[in-house]
Image (cartoon, rainbow, N blue to C red):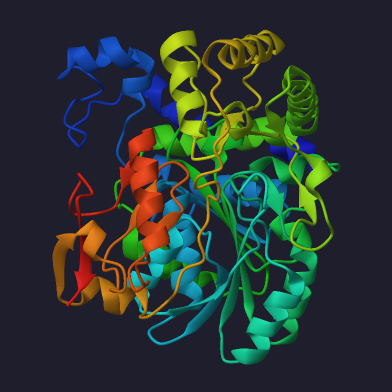
Length: 482
């Protein structure tokens, strides 16, 4: 990587030049650098609003970049070890969907773990591809889905040699990593693309002691959430490509769904954040790594909590662990993750990333300080002392292996009926049901409803999880195929 070149931020620098010119705006956006919306200026600041501008020759155009955006994307590709990079302003959701839509068309098969983000299954609804699920093991104690075992991927490839791609989470929301190098080698030997959801692995490219990144492992495409651990603004992400991928086709796919009115606030934040990672990423993530390991040790010393890490690695379903993730199992103090999440926010003014049935995740990144870690540890110690209950193992698992009865697209567009949820076991689901975050569907269109799944959904709802997806927001009824 050429560090001298990486000091440049072409989009940001072009915006600065444009701002100094004081051009009279007779284009959109209609707030006209904030003059038409003074409340917006008071909220965001004059400099921010003055940079919310439209695409024009000096600033390039995201739909067909030829100057500063193209230069910024080339710098991003170099920083992440990719052949090509694309700025994405629809979040990593749009990057994931662009990967799937590139690799799959109607009737194609794609091999993937079932614990994918909803964006991947949404892409199957859009393109009509058929998922071939590699159902991950579930840790018997902490209840989370693990990675894909290489032997299971090999079996899926042998049983479905016509599949076009293998989709991998790297890492999962909880920090679990599969044998990515092994999966890439296996898939490529059978002529299949490897697509990697690296939403939670932006930092992997910038520290040698973290798990291998998708591009380093030889994957074909990778979706990167720069706004998660990379420091850019929410909704800004990257799509990375290897040299084997047809860039012109990918660009056509991206433009099927991505906005033609890209926000320059998002674009410049990607540009600046890439520069920051390229120049200071290793130093920054070494601090993040140390803070997370310190927090893990302090939380485990409280007793009752289990902040897991490298100790989970088994060489099969967990080939590596992202130690920057502070994932904590809470059920041994008698509280669900969502109950601890709510207590931290409501009683201690601490906002963590998510709480689910058994775990919490505190996202530690380049913006955190050691005093914040101390405050979190102290609050968790208090919660154990003040709010712990008798231990219950009811509905411990975060993941229930589904029975797939129809493709997501067929089920989504089929005729459906809303019926009481307790009457749905044995029927085929026609919509999504998930706790958000993390946004991994409990049920997806085309999957069989079971008593176990209904019990789990109602338990999660009762405990306060944010349930998303179904037409009936009360979850008293569920859409099933007629």
